[in-house]
Amino acid sequence: MPESKIIFKEKIPILSSSEKLEIDNKINQIEKLTKDLRISFPQLSIPIDEFIMIGNYFLIIENFSKAIEYYDHALNIDSENGIALNNKGTALSNLGFKSKAINLFDTVLAKNPKNVFTLINKGMAYYSLRDYDKALILFDLALEIQSDSVNAIVNKGRIYYSKDKFDDAIEFYDKALQLESTNIFALINKGLAYSGKKQFNDAIDCYRKALRVDPNNLSALINLGHANSGEHYYKIAIKWYDKALEIAPNNVEALIYKAVSLLLDNNKKKATGVLNKILNIEPTNTFALETKQKIEEVKEENN
Image (cartoon, rainbow, N blue to C red):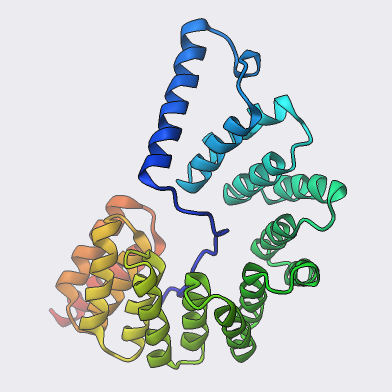
């Protein structure tokens, strides 16, 4: 069965509809102007803050390549701008360019060694590279500067989780939740740690609390299904996967878990249908191909 997981992302404020409309208008104005006048962005008299604001908008909606484009425009105006460098590093890290991201974070830290946000982002990049010792040093440095940094505390918990030290992980998630009781990352990661301990009912409680904060959170929905499956409540698990799929119909992780729960509930026909959908999305998906083949082999043996 595939491992239950969550990709931890830097917490970025959600834009209001009016803020989103304002940024959309600015993007349209800037790109229309460059198209009409056939000039490059740096030649326009646009404040650096506007480029950064638009870059942040694309970062929020996870269009990382477009975010980098706007951070580069900002850096053409001020090559040492810490916000643009840090946020470009975050976008690069999300695209998988960890080494390039770390170099940018180092540029920021050379100028401001106590930049907590950048220390945490650099730590997250090392975490993604599974260099947990370097990541831990960076999170500890961040906490020496800002002892109540929920982000750094949660990330320390994630390191212990990755080392299968689930009780230690839960201790850090609880510290984070004492500071911010509705922190969705702490709630979901705490649920993962309980799942690691096979305490699925405790995990279910964590995911339900997370969904009270954000009812459409895919990680909470998928992992709630996984925890119910761990308790052999397969039909309930399937309902949670279906809720996730209502939000993201092509989410392969949710589809895989749904297929597993259907198989465990002895519903091979529906499971095969889900596997076919996975293969429509990812024709070379190993799990779907191998599982479908096993179903066919069992069917042939029974004939």
